Image 1: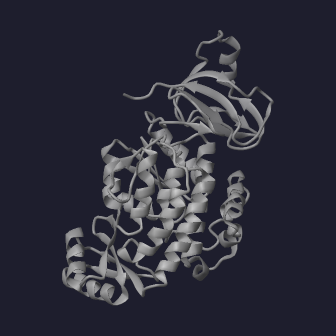
Image 2 (image 1 turned 180 degrees about the vertical axis):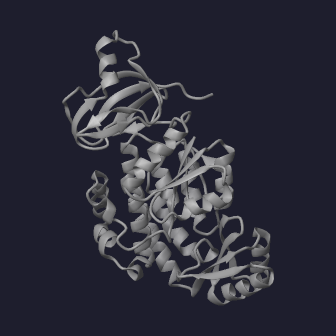
Length: 406
């Protein structure tokens, strides 16, 4: 099983859109800008760190970058069996699972970011990361510091984030040091996210959620609120609203992903934060961050090394394929040529019979000299593109029949 994970606020970097400008998936940036009335391309390419740290900017650029990368991954034919997202990342996970449309998700993220920024301005909120402390001791430190500080993120074993009023966070941090915390790091935000101080944001977001159409999920998403997989459309408006005022159970979510059989964790977005947390929490799983176009090849190679893996559901340009059917699509535009061995098989095969047995990572052919490798294993049943045909990015070139693992 392959899990897609989506990062939240804090993964942004100046100029993080630059590697993707010439990639076809960059078009989603303009779609997101149109949906929100914001110049997201300018933020992704020209904004400095201070500008990107503003919540209404941070969430939009982080989400949009994840959507560009998700689209690029889907273009090479890889899709997840299950998803999860850290805080803001939950919206990306829901889009990947088919629960909401890209346009609806973009509008929700825009509304959420504005609501959270406004809520943060009502109080002198702060957040701090406690390192080298148990969850129980972090909870005890907050309790002993009073009523205005709580655990906001369970990120990994020995890494907990607390949030609340500035004075209460400072007090809980000192108590945590006395309980053995090896390090306390103040997080450069001006809000107490995932605490009751986000209640006004929750109320505003609930209205936007009620106006959004949700669909039953194609693959489950593990929720921040309870670290359980959910697939029903009706559950998600409440889960997303509750998320704003309750802690992100990321440690528990990663454990759940491992429990249900995940073998590869793909971080869909920049920063690599979730990949680092995964390596600490579930070290037996393969974790990879896809942050640049070059990382797409690394992803295919990783899947190739796990030859028994096949994605759960495929979706290309809105067309759903049966679980046993897989499409190999063109990763770039150019002239397609099938591999010599496959070309020979195609010429001698009878109708409706397998042309060849394909393994994950095997070369199907070339496009203007660049190899096209299959992300799936199975029986090659047909070539959709013919020798010498000019193909476009995302165009199907071959189809396979696979058998899902029991």
